[in-house]
Image (cartoon, rainbow, N blue to C red):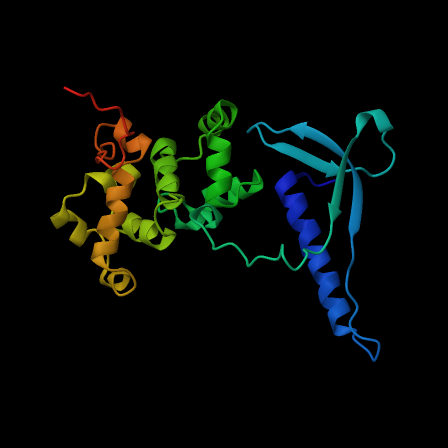
Length: 240
C-alpha cells in the first residue's frame, strides 16, 4: 500500500469532496440544487516516521490488529456565510522545486519520491536535524546549504515569489545576498520584465524590510528599525 504524508492525505480528501460537490451542483432539478452537508471520515491507518522525519501514513487494508492502527478523524462542513473567505493568495512555499536553479530534473524526481514536491516541503524537511542529515547521506549531487538558502529566498513572506525567482535568475541566491545589494547593483539584479510589474521603489522598500529581519541582522548586514520618539513609552517628567 502506497504511503502518503498527512498533508497529501488531506489534499486527496479535499479533491474527492470537491468532485462530489461539483457533481451535486450539476444535478439541479425543479426542487433546487443539491448541497453537501457535513462529512465525517474515520480513516484507520498505519503510521510511521520516515527517514527524513516526515510522518507517513498508509490506509489500512482491514487485516491489521486494531492496536497497531492509528485512526484519523476528519469532520468537514461547508463554511457559514460569515465564515466564507476567498482563497489565500499563493505564496513562495507553494512553488514547485523546479524554480530552484541548482536542482536537476533527476534530483527533483528523487525528492518527489520522498514526498517533497514544493518549496515548503523542502524547507520543512531540511529544517529538522533528521531531515537534513538524510539529505546529506543520500548524496543527491547538489549544494544543500546553497539550495536551502535559495528556497528560503523564494519562501520569503516579505516579498512576492516572482521577485525572488527573478533574483535567482540573476545569481542572487539568498536573502542575505539580496540585503547586501547596493542601489546600483539592485538595478542590474532584476529584469526589465519584472520592472514592468513592480516599480524599483517597491523593490527597494522590500529590501529595506528584509534588512530588518532577525536572520539578516544576525548575519551583520541588516539593522534593527530605529525607534522614533513616537515609539518610546511615555515617562514621568521631573520638575526642576
